[in-house]
Amino acid sequence: MPFFEGLIWMLAIHLRTFVDRDEASPMQGGQPEQSSGKMSFLRGNMLVMIATGAVWQFVGNSVWPFFSLYVLALQGTPEMIGIISGIGTIASIPPAIIGGYLADIYGRKKLTAFFSMILGLTSLLMAIAFDWRMLLIAVIIDSFAAGLREPAMSALIADSLSPESRGIGFLAWGIVTTVPSIFSPMIAGYMIDQLGALLTIRWGYALTGLAALTAGSCRYLFLSETVRPRPGEARSVSKMTRAMMGTYRQMSRDLWILLISEGLVWLGWAAASPYFILYGTTDVIGLTTTEWGLVLLGSSSVRVLGFVFGSLADRYGRRNMIVAMLLLAGGSSFFFLYLEALPQVALVFAVYSLSILVNQQMSQALRADVCPREDRSRVYSFFVLWQFATRTAGSILGGLLYVSVSKTSPFYFQTFAMLICAIVLAFMITEKARREK
Image (cartoon, rainbow, N blue to C red):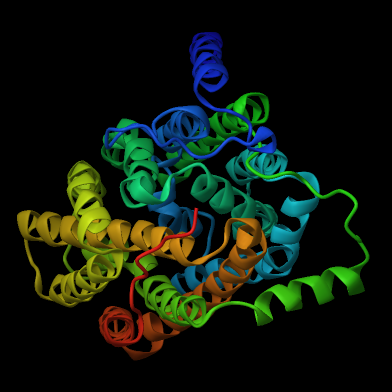
């Protein structure tokens, strides 16, 4: 690993040059980059986050798509896939409640960096899991750390983008970080066919842990804080709770509608997503793991088209783009059930993955548009809490539907959820002419 570590350190030094030159500290009056050019945001905090995220994704994408196979390799059952995912999500709920408040006290940069490193340690723990019970413990710790990190990291990214480039900026975060990992699932799928799921995924999680530790360290060293921390705020549980509830009561109508609709999307996604690989390989369609790796390669390759949709959303409206992507995601989930051959599966799953990606990033952009900068960490903690709660329900529901009802039922449920959410947003959200900074 000396070559890998040296490469990352040289990258980090290069990042520091851009941060020092291009980004003023917001605590000294700095604002998100306003220069001309659609890709002008690729500097400062965004450059640090995207570069470190790309390293993390490159390794992590060799194991994350195969989590269901890892559970089975550790003597788990199909039901346990949903249960482990659900319990892990439950573990994210308590820290999500206070994550935004802690970000205001200690700073968004510190929480983002520190808990990125903690997630690296939990990946190492997953690598040495000897059965599904130990994997469950690692997932719980991982989810707890993610719950504390997510409000701070989401707010930091939103703060680092200007309103004019927020749509394409969020998509850059979702796309550029995954470009190096395009071939990772295909390589991992081939290795699983040759060496078995257990050994391949163990090594994958070990390398993911090292990459996450490197990314967290670079974020601590080279990110700039986007708001002034408020260490003098009360830290007792009762006062913290009152402050958080006060923020929630002041949320606008648009934020509440976005909260409900995003929760419905996550509910459907969590119910179906763990079972695409099982339905596509061993249970119904009959693809090999290597072929499924090719499917994932195709879905990763088309992500670059997201820049087109991001640019269109910045120009013509993010709500309209979200509605279109929800309809596309629901439709592709439905048609997935009627496929028989690799080319068909690859095409439909690529459409599904692209629409999910664009929807998620545009939802974050629209949320930032209607949420005041100073309240983002706390408001985002509420969104993260709701996301984790609906993902928990969706994971458990999906497992029950797949095993007890039919193998098609989670996908039908996702289609229905996406359709309802698209209708809600189309008729209840109106984009504002003025977007929050």
